[in-house]
Length: 70
Image 1 (cartoon, rainbow, N blue to C red):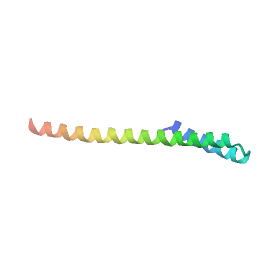
Image 2 (spheres, one colour; image 1 turned 135 degrees about the vertical axis):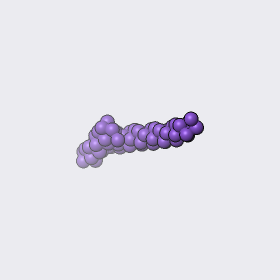
Image 3 (cartoon, rainbow, N blue to C red; image 1 turned 135 degrees about the horizontal axis):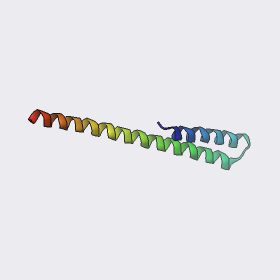
Image 4 (cartoon, rainbow, N blue to C red; image 1 turned 120 degrees about the vertical axis):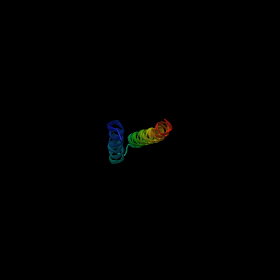
């Protein structure tokens, strides 16, 4: 998880809390949107990492097979 994603989540929580305390629905909703943005970016980063890991695993198996056939 990257720093930017966590920063968006924390900023969103702060905005949401400030909006609730001041009864500012717009600010509260902006906070929720910031949190959601951070969550989505975090999930996309995790998915990308999983794809890279799987690719490296498969590539390693292919290379092992090629080495066996030599």
